[in-house]
Image (cartoon, rainbow, N blue to C red; front, side, top):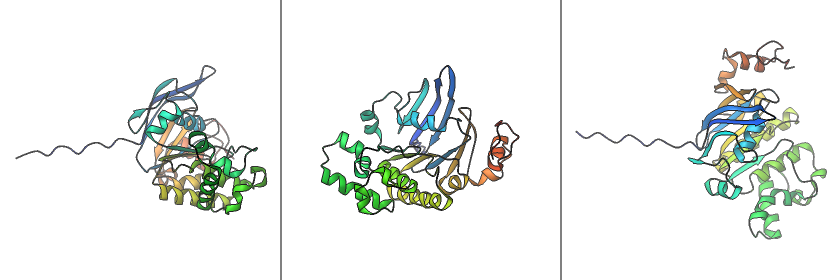
Amino acid sequence: MTVADPAPQSIPEIELSAVSRYFDESFSLKGIGFAVDDKESVVLIGPSASGKTVLLKTIVGLFLPDEGRINIRGTDTAGSSGEERDEVARIGMLFQRSALFDSLTVWENITFRLRQNTKLSNDDAIELAQGKLAAVGLAPDTALLYPVELSGGMQKRVGIARALADDPDILLLDEPTAGLDPIMANVINELILENVGNLGATVISTTSNLDGARHIGDRVLMMHQGQIVWEGTAAEMDTTDNPYVDQFVHKTADGPLGIGLS
């Protein structure tokens, strides 16, 4: 009788091991560790200054970790250049408040990174931008406008279009619905689901919108003071006895978060 070889273990798309980051001799991230599988959507929740945005910027390489490893598809990318990281996986990022360049048109914003790294002609760049705008429900002529001419919801859509510009394998979304009314927030969440589904991308997002977390997240991680204090499914947020999650979900003044969440 022969014994079959065990099935090979799949490598996580993203894996953080003991990642720490200091600012002014205090922790912004402290020993962060978790893994995200291919095509999984993980949502980070937590109060302001809990480390969510710093974590995304550290994964994408805008900040360097002081300790730990950030493996993307099994390769440690901490300290890698953008070009080296692109060879492992294409990463798109939506920044808080969209972070569009005011002096550039919409099509220039969407194709900014591509035009830095390739010999994309203006005509081809405009055509590409219009395709991405269509994917987020905006008209082709939006490509010729400037950010100041757009509403907040339109700016958020353009930010998503920019994150999608080179069909990323991994998508990092920092507060994708911040500052939007509930109807527009639902529209943005649906656009995220639709585009992520079309791309087959792996997603890590941050949000203070618990409805959004329930809508787009396969798994939820809660952060507090630079650490992960809870992990579970979106449905488990409402039933867990974890005191951090309980205070955050029910917005009570008393609890380990130490703040009122009105």
